Image 1: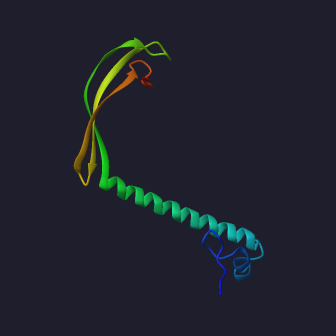
Image 2 (image 1 turned 120 degrees about the horizontal axis):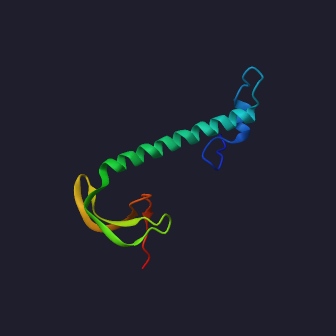
Length: 118
């Protein structure tokens, strides 16, 4: 009967007994750490694949409707502020589910995104 570790893998004691040392260079603990890192990398790759599939099914497209000069100056460099009207379309399986028009503010000199507070 195998004892499972709380992280889902075999216990450290089992692995240290079951793994033969490779040419006397590595200890059993370092082999366990290597196996743990490899499992973690594989889990991370799986999460990235799932996110990629989700991005194919669900997505968000932006379309610039127009730009105009906005009042005020950039607080960082003193350049002119530009207001850009953007239409966002949230899509599910390539069908638009929600359309939303927002205004984004940026500096025309340093291209920094500026945020307005209500």
